[in-house]
Amino acid sequence: MIRASRRRLLRTAGAALALPAVGRAADIVTDISFYFPVAVGGPITKIVDGYAADFQRENPSIKVTPIYAGTYQDTLTKAQTALKAKAGPQLAVLLSTDAFSLIDDDLIVPIDTVATSDADRAWLRSFYPAFLRNGEINGHTWGVPFQRSTIVLYWNKAAFRDAGLDPERPPATWDEHATVAQKLTKRQAASVERWGAQIPSSGFPYWLYQALATEAGGTLANADGTETDFASSACVEALRYWIDLAGKYEAHPPGVVDWGTTPRDFLEQKVAMIWTTTGNLSNIRANAKFPFGVALLPAGKRRGSPTGGGNFYLFEAATPVQREAGLRFLRWISSPERAAQWGIDTGYIATRSDAWETPAMKAYATEFPAAAVARDQLQYAVAELSTHDNQRVTQALNDGLQAALLGRKAPDAALTEAQATATRLLRPFHH
Image (cartoon, rainbow, N blue to C red):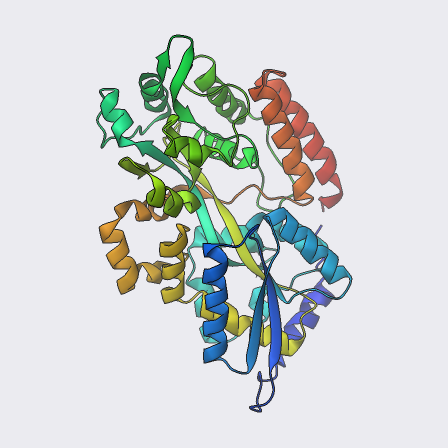
């Protein structure tokens, strides 16, 4: 039950058809701002500030201001609060999985009701289909892919060589992954000097788990965001494999593994293989003191990874002139050249195929082939878990996963309980 009513969609579409030109007179400046999820200053803010300045130089009738708003969750909360007080920005980068919640709260407009020209429609079609899936709801496109990712496997080639393994051959299947992880685990007396594998389970446990569930042949939710299937046999199998890496194979840290410290553990060679976002690629490349590789995630019954990361959204509160200005900015910042440069600078995946044909990206991918791995994995990618009342539904799953990983509940019991909670939360959204 999406409360974006037909009447509201018609009103939005009508406004789009009547959009006035932005800043027709030289002295007219349209102000727009956007929330961007970054917790502290640093390279990312410098890049985004540079984009804003470059856009304004090329479009002097539009002033665009980035507002840095903390984590994705902080950014969503600030946007919701500001918009309900009629004091919000016109755009924001929020998780692709926030779409249902933003629609249910009547906070965003479908991009395709503003982007109505043939050129606009061609622009929307230019993005990889895997990145559009989370934003394609109720027959409309609600989000513009920006900083997007998949989960990939990073491996330490020096550790492979040390363990007598081929440093150029990462594990391709679950069985190989478990066996290799055992060989890579290095013990000294009763302590572990190096774990073989590490899949983080704090922060976004559902996301890492969705990769395993997909590889086991499971599907966590339907496309309408109204039903989940957390307790299927495939989903239980996926969680058992995760637990077995620590228990049966003794090749993975026990309990809950921290999301934030996983890249550091890899860089400090406390673990030989990690599963994490391709968004960590630039950090690992800049700081690794050893040769490393990046690979597709290993296959269970199939290969697979959820997509991840953030989309740009256009808010309902924007005036028609601001919507036109916002659309102009979105088309500018997602152009092939900027999508390519964003991927090079951050490690996120350039979100459209023509970005990979730019001279800058061709040179980068030739010099650093690992950059193309996440792109190549898109053929196996699925939409990230997203439902109505998404935060509470995913929290129920996260709680169940952590309870099982800590040994407090059996995998099937933990997932059955999470499924029961999700069913209750989603009942109001059934048609």
